[in-house]
Length: 372
Image (cartoon, rainbow, N blue to C red):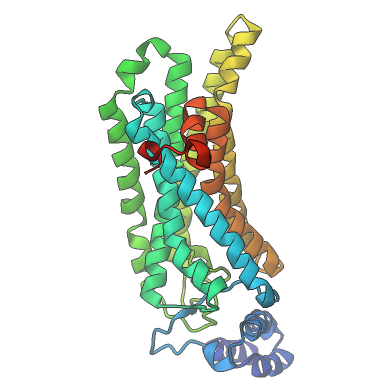
């Protein structure tokens, strides 16, 4: 009985105690050891950020800013890391903007496949713009704080555009399925109106599904460390800082993950099974290879999107005691790889996209009609 009361007392005070005091309580109460390890890790992070202990703990009566994390231990290298991130942002924004412009002005790209590609490029640009301010502030200006409401908005935008990307990848797989399995009816099935309707439905699903998420989080008191694991705000990272029951948030987050990303991935896999079955029915080996080659771009883009997303989800849910560099590595792959890789993959495998990109990025051939 006394042991349970002591443990409850530690939990009640954990948002106000320093790691030193928690260590003393951990010696007298073994159940508090995990709490001590958690706060010690956060305290070390704050020390690396150059912040005092008074910036670590949340006052329940107020709503202080969150503290974003660069790469603890590599603060002296943040300047050249910032330069690298600027290059990545420039590539992502530049290449995807060229694709958007090319699809707009080139009449031979006015097809459902390229409409969906332009939607994917737009979501990549939007995702980059949502994270750019905090990432550059963290690495260039060494400014780690972000207001509570601003963090909620960024979290909502990141997850929303990520879900839009997932829906567009599903739409692109449906496009390839119709082109492979029912080519004679392709023009009648995927009209411009249907393509626009799919884009609107994907966007509406994202915003409607994620709309409750900030409100679910806002009701939670934050009384633990307010240090996040990344240079931007993610829901799994934020709810770990709450000291109240997060069952509703966890269940709803799992429901969103399974019903959207999980279902999209399953349907994409199913479409590829049907496409593969249709391609294998082609008698000519040369024609089979040609048909499969046209699907390589979409396959690579799907892998570039889902592998980092699954990785960062696994690290957040099951890697509580994993080294911090794994969190940083996965967050950077999740943030930078898809927006940069998508236009490069499509330019390498699709000559209709390669030509506008080569025109814009080759100074001697620059065509302002396409690029701007």
